[in-house]
Length: 508
Image (cartoon, rainbow, N blue to C red; front, top):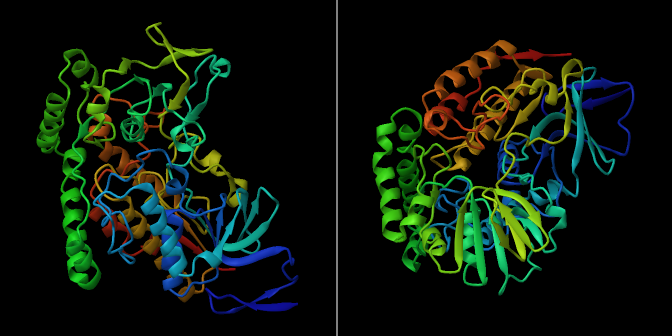
């Protein structure tokens, strides 16, 4: 018999058999090396919990900012706010950073904080199983590599799996077909006739970026988005100098941007009238940038502003107004060799098809997870995704989710929510260590009451009552399982300190 000291509990445990040499045994396994995975890893390290492994399916870190490399890709939250509060960057090149700069920021954070050594690349997790006998998670990759951990943290992110529309005959199309999240940089669009399917957050960035390159561009639009101007600008040397050498200035910029965005929450959640000014701004943008009456009618939404994701762009409407661009209401009914056919039956000749159809935000965790008593996460979520504070799921001890159900935002920086969740998880782990407990699991009644509150809170939000259908809603139930129906400050208050009475704590 051997005795192993548990780094989290601080006491020695008896073990009848040694861990197999081909099993990587750590305290915490984190799945995903994007913003949320690196964020929780950084705070674990800061708390002195350094026995953790980050399993990343790809060969590089960065998550959605690694995968999305389409022309014009960038963030719609200001750079000083779309970054970790504990690792602020003083030399952002502009107010709204592009994809390459954000990815470089994440790489730099991981390198300086020593997180690279904790990452195992090329490790796509196929399944994870809770073993009650020793209160451990057994995690296996698609390559057969095995890991054991006291805690499992899923940080796979909601914008990870591209959503592809079902287009009959697409296999017969004799040109390149790809999604914006899998951009084909080997395809030269110069002089090509391009058909774009979708008008979401990605399309409004890549369409203006390629419009001058192509010979003809047809945009198939099911539902027009509401758009407000993008007040982007480069940061001058004075700003960068102050941000680097005067930390209070850097914090002041971040805090100012935070409250500008936070004050918009009421318009989405509780006071539709608070959206009046934003709605007027969006309508004015259409009036100023779209002179053609037919196009203006086509791009004007017929649902409440904020119901679908509110987008920012100052070059979308000018791109659609170009003489070689045609916006066709509706989707694509079928594809043929050298052409696509719209819902109206009109055939449009095309050399390339690009999907700007977003992501599957309802099926984000695509690994087999088995918790207590053989319960799988797929079974637990058979009627819709739900968790407690978007972080814990009943029946799955010692498992935590980053950006889990109902933690997404429509008005502010997702990084704020990520940090709140990460600190909440670290708080639980540190307090378990002090209590000498082996496992923690949210009480089913606590999770149920929380989700009942969510459902009631969601009824009057613009996302549910604004007259639209969106990717926020689970198609099985119509329930919004993605967004947080309150201010980020309210979420921070709920997660500032874990209430252990909400959980079952067990010791062997």
